[in-house]
Image 1: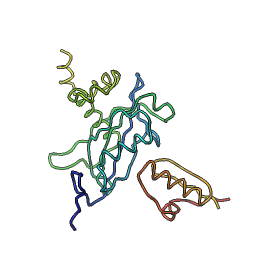
Image 2: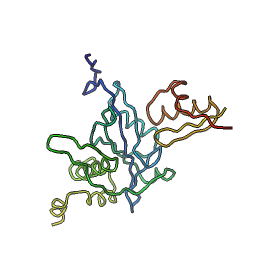
Image 3: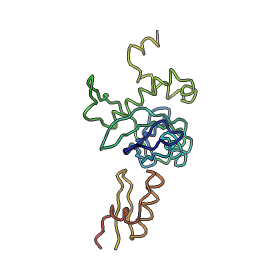
Image 4: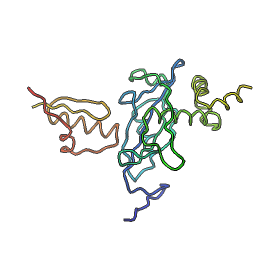
Length: 169
Length: 50
């Protein structure tokens, strides 16, 4: 079977693809996990007619106010489908009516040199995503300009220790 | 007969057949980008004892 490449899309897709979205905010004290269906990963079916990032952005902005940032962070194979993970950063004021929990740190799921991890928890996916965001906050001008000072301070704790020390000397 | 329907995300609805199907179709469309048929939505529901 040959996939039909949709104009404008970077890849052709045959199998199922899901988006797993972590909606996060910072209230000045805690980094918070929230979402339109509760403080858990938000799952969205994707089709082959739209770029997944466009779909996630449009669904986030149609469901929540003050969406500040949408960024893809990782992918994995889970339950016979490819899962694309996204961070959606919203302002603290936009989640007052939404259930939320403080984000807890987690160990990363580690691969071997040639094999993916056998099991990956959603807290590990979020940990990886926040480490990625910490790197972007330093390297990407748009992300740096978008995130609040509270976020930048929080994300400093997600930067690996040697780099963190270099930053502060 | 009333039914209860729970989505994997934790969202739940209860009520008459037509009402829970309509609510589920709307939930699927708005939050999960899923288009469910009447039968697909109803297949996820559990009948409630009177």
